[in-house]
Amino acid sequence: MEPERTERRTLVVEFTQKADSRAAVLIEGVSKWFGTFQALDKVSLNVAVGERLVICGPSGSGKSTLIRCVNQLETHDEGRIVVSGAELRPGMRGLAEVRRDVGMVFQQFNLFPHLSVLDNCTLALRRARKIPKDAANQIAMEKLERVHIAEQAKKYPRQLSGGQQQRVAIARALCMKPKIMLFDEPTSALDPEMVKEVLDVMTALAKEGMTMICVTHEMGFAREVADRVVFMDKGAIIEEAAPQKFFGNPEHDRTKQFLKQLLH
Amino acid sequence: MSFIEIVLGILQGADVTAEVTFFGLLYAVPFAVLAGVLQHFSTGAARWAITALIEFWRSTSVIVLLYVFYYSLPAFGIELSAVAVGAMVLGLNAGAYSSQSVRAALQSLDRGQCEAGLALGLNRFAVLRWIELPQALRKMIPTFVNEAIQLIKGTALVSLITLTDMTFRAKQIAQSTYDPVAIYSGLLLCYLMVCYPVTLLGRHLERSTGKLGERVNEL
Ligand SMILES: Nc1ncnc2c1ncn2[C@@H]1O[C@H](COP(=O)(O)OP(=O)(O)OP(=O)(O)O)[C@@H](O)[C@H]1O
Ligand SMILES: [Mg+2]
Image 1 (cartoon, rainbow over the protein chains, first blue to last red):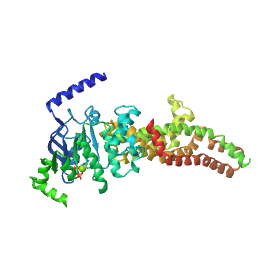
Image 2 (cartoon, rainbow over the protein chains, first blue to last red):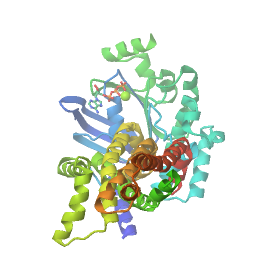
Image 3 (cartoon, each protein chain N blue to C red):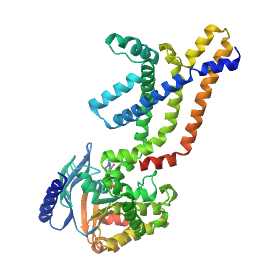
Image 4 (spheres, rainbow over the protein chains, first blue to last red):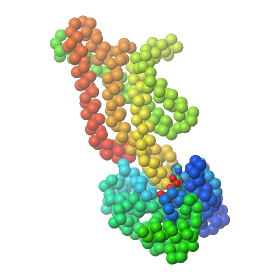
């Protein structure tokens, strides 16, 4: 039974991947309402495999809502979202499997306070991927080394600084070997002196070719790493361009205004 | 009869008190966790049903329930032992109270905890089992200890359905010896002796919840 189902899923994935050949994420005409308030207004956005996308925009413009739709922490009301070949629908089967391919890093870290750093990293490996404890620990230590925090593996989240916690959160997401990583303002809750250590880890990840969608206002990071910058306002994408063009010569007035505010 | 003799006499009922408390907890804890979790997750008719069940056990008089289950059910051909009735009624009553703190503990968890688990690809049940319940359990320990103590004290009521617990023993002794001051202060002392260690145990548990949490995670 099990192999048959997996086989069928692979077929479906192959088929859709051919259709949208290089797309890691495909967003088509997506709208979303919270009650009567429209948070997303017919957003369309494609992210290619290996692409690094930065999303910015004023508070309440729908940035979080958009990337949370990509792993269905929010469901969309209209439009189509395809993630590495699978179309996402409310209440779909196999959503957990899709989510295992999509790592997410939150503004507030959201580490599990009752688990050690190591157990934070191995929880999903063991309980979702059913990998035995020793093998899971090995994977976790590898990823913790990658974010330079392996020596803290036995500690609890509350014993770490914000920057350290966020690096653990990145390692935890990487343990699942995701194809796509989502970052929702990963440095906004950090003290200024800790921002760099997190951005450095993200930059390294980008250089290794990870597909990344980052909501961030760190313009230095965007310039250095992003292939494309997207500006959102009032639930819609207003402008998208390569970072040089976006920061050097933005087209839209609202973009100009926003960038001016950022500099102050 | 000396005071010591009276206390020893009362303590002959301690085994019944312990028995009813033990089986009562076997009803109370699973009922509290299950009802709290179900109430937290369900919506619509299911939520209405589980709330009604909780309210039934929470908002009716324990004495009346003891009489109903012990004296009325046999009329319908269902005969339960006094211990079974006592444990069930007291246990479900305590469990119904505790279920509200289970639900409150689950509701008070940061939404980001559940979201982080889901984002990692855990299903909803795994998130409950490995992320939410271990954290909620820690918050629930003081309430559970309180409920356990209430349960022990509540067992005094089973003397009304013929069980020879500590309170029943005290009344027996009172019939043969007229010394209400000694007998009832002896009874007070006996409940204090049984309940206080539980309070201490609860404090110890609260302090060591870190370790307890870890152990739960290895199950
Ligand atoms: N669960 C919700 N219920 C109701 N309204 C919501 C909910 N989540 C978001 N919103 C509203 O949707 C709009 C977009 O929210 P979103 O969090 O996506 O904005 P954002 O661009 O991420 O802003 P910020 O920079 O402050 O994080 C906001 O006006 C917000 O108030
Ligand atoms: Mg946001």
